[in-house]
Length: 172
Image (tube, rainbow, N blue to C red):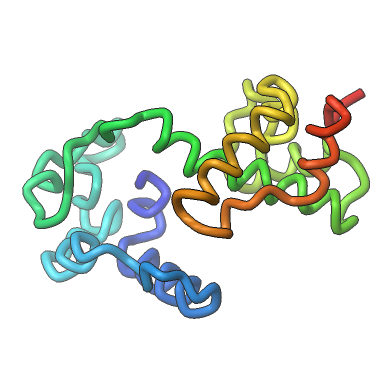
């Protein structure tokens, strides 16, 4: 949400709509609350209000008015772990796929790219180092469970499945 506020909700909606069309997602794009925010001109930092309130140069504060929009639930999801897994595990899977498809040669290249390019938390060391801390078997099991509930987009790649089967890490 902070990233969307930085680039603008109007830009975020355009990106979400484009990705939904290209990836043929069943949800079909942005949520109605986002459209309502754009209608209200809550475009993020550039308008001073979005998911956060941007007043001057200080740290932005959460915009409590977002919770009043139709279809928006409380700030904390009912199952915080599920929320976390649905966001983080696909990033781990795609990072592993980058190695599998030989886009890069080493896990540290993927992790560095994710830290510098997407803002992955540096203290976690990147998605592949984080996967090692969890264990490949757990990551695969959790991705399989998500795939069973939410669709094939969560299915683990072959590189992850191989590491899980051999109890291997990305980093030696």
